[in-house]
Image 1 (cartoon, rainbow, N blue to C red):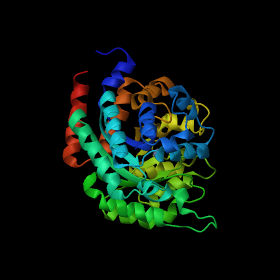
Image 2: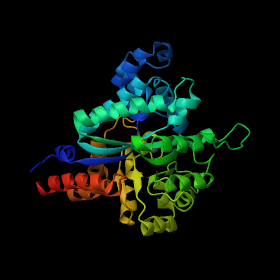
Image 3: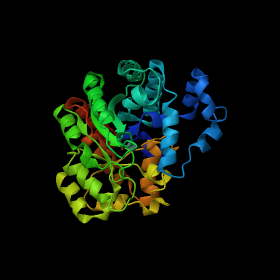
Image 4: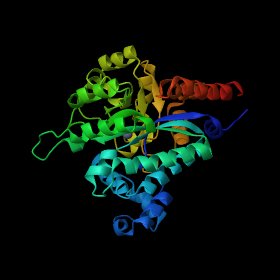
Length: 356
Ligand SMILES: [Zn+2]
């Protein structure tokens, strides 16, 4: 019998469904990347890990976006992608995460930042890192390709769908390299979900999961974006979706269609969506009958871990161990793994639970 809740959570086999690869780069790996690319490293305090940590505290979503793109700019060669994929795999092993769906924004690396990178370069690195992590640590990584919806708005307020269309084309090209889904993130006010309905429906026809971010930013009427993500984008799961709590008809829609929300507690706090986690609707969403999963979003930038996110369920919402087991199991049930792999993952979880 494990008495300590931290030990209990650390020993629990886990699945993570919402984590951005670039946001998972820990400060010591970022230092390695900065040494590889000294000409661009002057923008961040790479010498001092503590300074690097405080560099990544955010006053708002826009500032977070700037930090994120600075980190993305350090990824310039296939071996950089290999390093961060492998290091993420090591982190999975350390935390007993068996399977993870990891978001990456390839269009930013091929088109937004001038690096001369092609999709094939990125895939070469990702695949090497993923395979080595599988061999060394026994972890399963799958990719979700995403784009920033802000890139789809031009200065004259007209829309440019190239980032969205290119990202889907990349996902199709990379299907045999472990891509299981498509997402869109960023500021929803500028670019509402219905603009991408045909793109996400095409993605589903290609066999990908529709996994949009929606209802994250606590804007007025934001629950309508969650509704649109379900109706227009045929979402299989929703990234965040917390603003559903504002509208009982949206809660009903999510409950009846059994569409899970991928929740990221510390992310919501770090991006000032709530001033205190006691305001977070996690328990109310679950009490409304929704399927919730627990995730980190950008663990390095928000200085958290998946284990820590589960600990918060006990600390903030007074969840018991059996509650935590129920929530953790959700991720195994709703992930995009093939039925065979899902069965293997679930049997490991069940064995751990039966041995308690
Ligand atoms: Zn996210």
